[in-house]
Length: 400
Image (tube, rainbow, N blue to C red; front, side, top):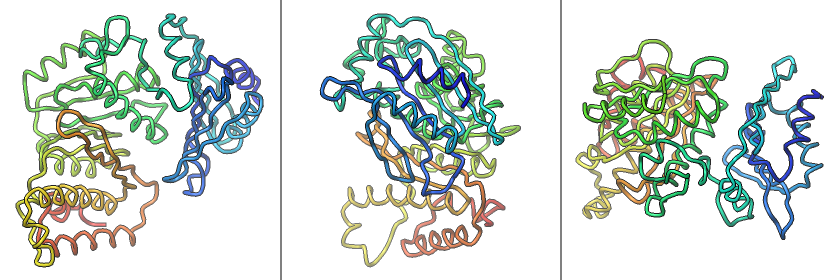
């Protein structure tokens, strides 16, 4: 066992721990965990360490004493995972394990937190009472202050708490896909239809400032005043590798490698053009929150479903769900592992769906072809012509 790693665990597995995340598993199979989170919680006035294991679509919880938790982490890192991230009130650390078993420990001391932030952290240890957010109350973040979500001393403005929750939920999606992104080279991200860009700024802050990734993010939008304002704010915060450009999704071409495409509230078929670009560029990760969806609603026609589709609101909701399900299946047919997740969105509807797609390491041609054929059959049955299906069928991107 690496002595630095052992010393790190002995110094940090105590009440001052925020969390430990184990990721980048050696075994990528569905039967093995792909991530483990550890954090202190108060149970009957006693501090224990809650281990949350993510395995496939399932999540398991178990509580341990401090000494046994150290033994478990040592075992997991030496046998199952290649990356360990430690967040403690006194330091942040990243532990990387090479394929040959060489362990590298990078440890960085952090300034002492203000008393208010420490009190908030203690509250967050209370079991099943206060949710711990990635961006914590009590720690000022410049863009949150400018948005009116935080006060200058880091308190959350109660009237903007829903927006605070939404931003943190989005960052949880980013946290889940971190093992997919390159750590030793620049991560290049394109945000289509970035709008006011509060989630773009959150993404940059989380990846660059908190996780210390070398990240380059480009936001694209049609509104010139939005681009000017976002560029001004990026300069104000010193976000040197966050840039904003005026442009249309359908016409935009990116030079060089793209690791992730984000599309939040790209209207109607603009989402389809963004997904097409992502597939064409062979990006590792796609995060898409569709906005208004009219195309399928105008097209859908089916004799067997006539008694359901005659009700406007039912037809509208069914069409939106079918649109996203078709998009997800088409991404599966292009070699992505795709999930549809619930996303809190206070600007458009009370709850929205997020499509998350992660590029598979190995293509399964037969399975991909089957997914494509199933989507085509569904489209014929419902008499619909979704834009993404037409675009993929037109070019090389449609051949599997």
